[in-house]
Amino acid sequence: MPSEVNGSNADPTIDESCGTPLSTKATLFEVLTRLWGSWGEEMCPPGTYAAGFSLKVEDPIDGDDTALNGIRLHCVASNSMYSPNSASVQSAEGSWGGWKAIKWCPSGFLTAFQLRVESSQGGGDDTAANNINFKCGENELKGDGTNWGDWGGWSERCDGKGICGIKTLVEEPQGRGDDTALNDVHMYCCA
Image (cartoon, rainbow, N blue to C red; front, side, top):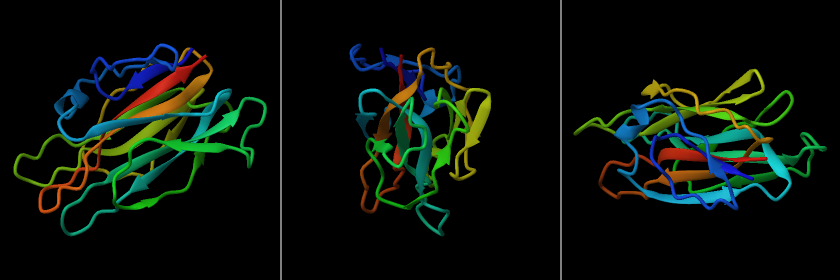
């Protein structure tokens, strides 16, 4: 049975047939949770789990930065690691930046994550989520995001086989206003 892992400490609505939550111990994420954007989610195909990830990042510009715009999970069946038949899933994503290279677990599946978030800048340029790291077994995979903000604590470790889905909070383009793109993330854990 899947479970949801939260980048924030919010109590998400969970469809128990799709997953259960993994939550972080950090309070940093409460600063941004649910302030900007709407949620989207996507699950790995049945019988597959995330063994890798890639990030959509807007590199720093001289203007309205958005930093982390999307997270893609690369899902494989447990008996076909790093197969060309892997499926990629992502939920909502921001409009800016480009996709970075895939980071693969040396073995096993993604089991925990840590989100880097910049708190509200008041009247300044907000970026919200900036980077993410994952664990697979004892290995840590570092994201290719930006360095603004602070790292929150690690999520709980997935007690199932591995992470199997993603839910992201993304703000739509604001036109003349300050854009943030990706604000928060939850992960699903499947047995």
